[in-house]
Image (cartoon, rainbow, N blue to C red):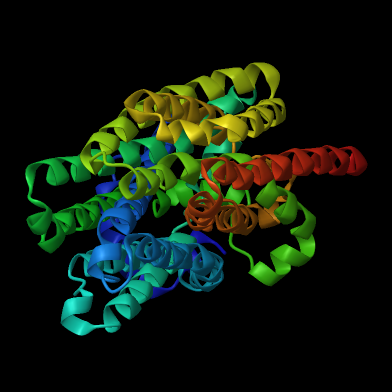
Amino acid sequence: MSYETRGPSSATLEGDARRLNARHSDVNVGEIAIGVVIGRTSEFFDFFVYAIASVLVFPKLVFPYVDALTGTLYSFGIFALAFIARPLGTGIFMAIDRTYGRGVKLTITLFLLGSSTVAIAFLPGYDQVGWASALLLALFRIGQGLALGGEWDGLASLLALNAPERRRGWYAMIPQLGAPLGLMVAAALFAFFVANLSARDFLDWGWRYPFFVAFAINVVALFARLRMVVTPQYAKLFESQELQPTTVTDTLKAEGRHVVIGTFAPLASFALFHIVTVFPLSWVFLFTDQGPARFLVIETIGAAVGVVAIFASGTIADRVGRGTLLGVTALAIAVFSGFAPQLLDGGDVGEMIFMILGFLLLGLSFGQSSGAVASNFSKAHRYTGSALTSDLAWLFGAGFAPLVALILASRFGLIAAGAYLLSGAVCTLVALGMNRQVVAHDQ
């Protein structure tokens, strides 16, 4: 679909963004990278604001009629709904992309994400509306998931395709920086409110402010990304590299095996993602006498280590190869799963060691997990294939990780939480082996 043939609704909606870009006629990799980081940071900030509230707020606000552990498990169940909704969102919004253009799709998805997020800030508790509180929370969470599935703008793929050949590992890690950056801001914000408000004030109104901040960040991200994807020069670049939307059905028929391999290749890092970000907070909050503000500060420090490790992954991958780095880190994650969870019962020192080691491994593996096998996709299906692969990897690797890990740890001890992580490492190693066979066969 050419840029000129997109419908009048798209042209009207995107006009302001184009005028803002009147003086920007050159397309360069650095500019793409900035757009990618802004988009990913806003996405992950929303993600972590909700994740932290799932531990500190929703069990008491929405499920006060059950014990704290059960309430947290219910909360994690709703947490997973977004990951289930993501592939559906991709299918819906790819259709909008094909009909009205990338700018219209991106605008709708980011407004849906922002409105769903800010709606949570006004969520009434069980004491006000009864069981409808959980129903509303689930509805807003599904809205977030649909939006996250639809906000794929293709900039990450465009960045990878325009990166210098010997620097692809470096540029592959750039989109992943959004995760630790988003966590640092979200954790620091919640730590501030938890530390400076009484428990009653925090539960009444303090927790709601980060969701308003998330809405504001979404608005900024919307215009930052529209600034790029709707300009004629970027539209032509998308088209020249055939980064155009196709139907999910056609993509699965043509590229099904690559979607499957791409889904399971990064599972070690995606499983580790929630084992070091969401699950530890729930364990410390439920099973220790230490305050959440202190642990949120530890998470912020861990996320900073993650930023450094993601940068390092780019340099290492360019020297040894992305597949090799993913395989080695998967083995390291398997080892980590066997002893590290028990450190969460080791007080300040044990928790700090767990978080530092966890984020170090997460940065090295997650830094290269985005589109690990995207080059396998044909150009005609790379845009949709990359979005769908990401959705499914998050669903199978991370969506249920906090829920499963907390169930296992509460029933069988912390050592059992490592079982989920170990399964992700095994899946990564198997998928990487399959990928080598597929590539060799295709050659």
